[in-house]
Every structure is written in C-alpha cells, then in structure tokens.
Length: 106
Image (tube, one colour):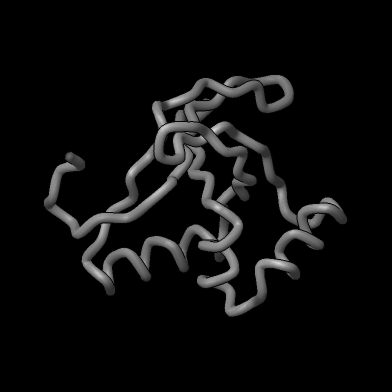
C-alpha cells in the first residue's frame, strides 16, 4: 500500500547552513546530480527572483526538523504544489523563510 507524504524543499543557503558546507559546495553537488534540486520563482520585494531548492530527505530532513525545534521556528512556504515525481505526483512545500513557531505570517 502506497503512503501519501509531502516533500519538503529547502533553499541552497539553508542546506549549506544545516550541513556546515558552503553554498558553492551545495551548488556543485546539485550540478553533479548528487542532490535533487529544482528552481522556482519566489517573490522578492516588488518583483520575483529564481531560487534553487534542494529536496530535504533522510539526514537533511532530520537536520531541518531538529534545527527548527531547537530554534523554536517554523518554515514559511510558497503555495503547495503538486509535482510529477516520475510515475507519481507528490504534494510539495518550498520553504522560503522562517518565523518563530506559533506566529502567523503577516
């Protein structure tokens, strides 16, 4: 029986922070195909910018959850997106910022 789950995608800078590596190293790992990543248009002031997001899975997802709990913060996401993942479609969240847990985005 197939389980339904949401995929979490993190910005390059966040992945670098969580793993203790540089953004340049994370970009290289993405380019080499060692980290699954996609680009999305993200609001930036009065315009938009393209950002690269890395799939948070396994150890990276564990690091993200632990760091959010430790800092008492929660992610602010783009709208949920249904994404084709090979033979299946998955619900995806792209985290763009963080706020203190319990606060609502203004």
